[in-house]
Amino acid sequence: MGRFNYFAHTFSYFFYVDNEGGLNKINSLMEILTNKEEVREKLKNNPLQAAHLLRLNGYGSINYECACGETHDANGKDVSCKGSAKPFKALLKCSNNFVTMIKIEGFFRKKAISEYGFKASIMD
Ligand SMILES: [Zn+2]
Image 1 (cartoon, rainbow, N blue to C red):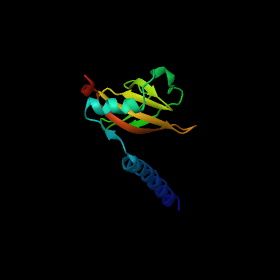
Image 2 (cartoon, protein in one colour):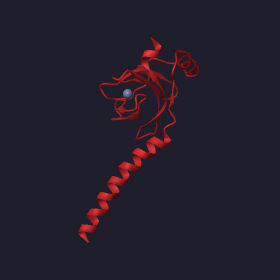
Image 3 (tube, rainbow, N blue to C red):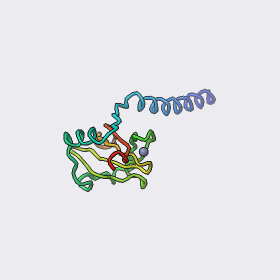
Image 4 (cartoon, rainbow, N blue to C red):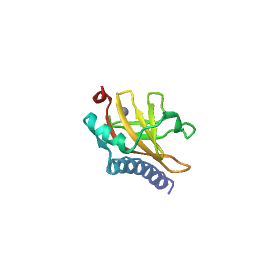
């Protein structure tokens, strides 16, 4: 009996992790922009404001799916906030030089939804 419980516990743990990863992939509707014009068009619809207008710290880790293909913590030290947008969006740049616009949802537990992203170098 004890052994069965242990197995069930382990199984549900792995299932949870796997399910979470799978969900993130399926729900990923992030648009990857490939040129300056597309970025300008996006920012025209959702003008950027100063980064400090959006306070993300104080919520702990907010993991988001980055345009580089990795998952980063929006409050991590290798991620910098380049700007914010209404109502609760942040433009984040990671150490791989990719920029991602995320939308923060949730009240007590923050969740980041990646809207679009691009390689920072296309803006050079
Ligand atoms: Zn990244």
